[in-house]
Image (cartoon, rainbow, N blue to C red; front, side, top):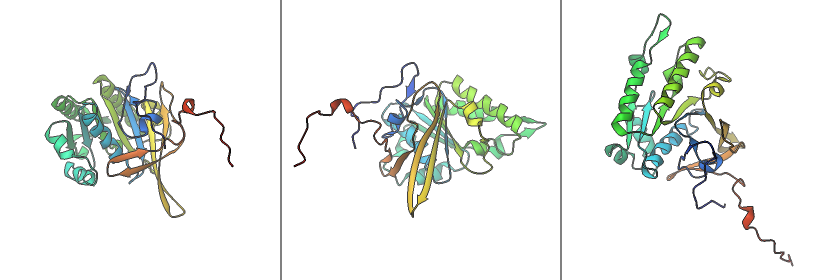
Length: 259
């Protein structure tokens, strides 16, 4: 399959943050919207954590952009163990303060009382983590754990406050969400909040498991809108943009006899 040897040029008028993930930046027309939040939706085992962590790792190694991974489900030790199967020296990046990993128990650090939901504690911890590493990239994993058990009115208001705050601190953020019945992302809510929405899917057809990715939305930029297969290998994720990047200008017009 043909792959461009030069970086993908971002769409004019919209600053992009390249993910560094093979094939993904081609589909995103240069990368994720810079200094804006992206929602990454997928079922359990679809590759959300691996993709979002690789976004941080490639940012630190390739683009010299430190990152923060804040988990609301798995501990830092569990995350490191899960990433150990890949050829990324995550422990070394953490040691060099290129990546900061923190586990937050939302049951202990937030409160729901008299109809008010307090996110100030979360903002303070995020701010400290960003300042600790001079982070340019953030991953929040996952939004379902942050806003569990909230009614719709408070949910929409507090999610809007979180997304606005992330834009104000000038970081490119990925926020993961579960694709399942009962998820807090009611239909249309992610369209209202996020500048970019990416959906991951892990399906089994004829006893063959296939992972697929679709960019559902990219505000202010064109993007590939098909479903694209992707693989998780030891050296990270590879997205296959199919024929989207064929360089037709290099095709020869010479005719050759079939014999």
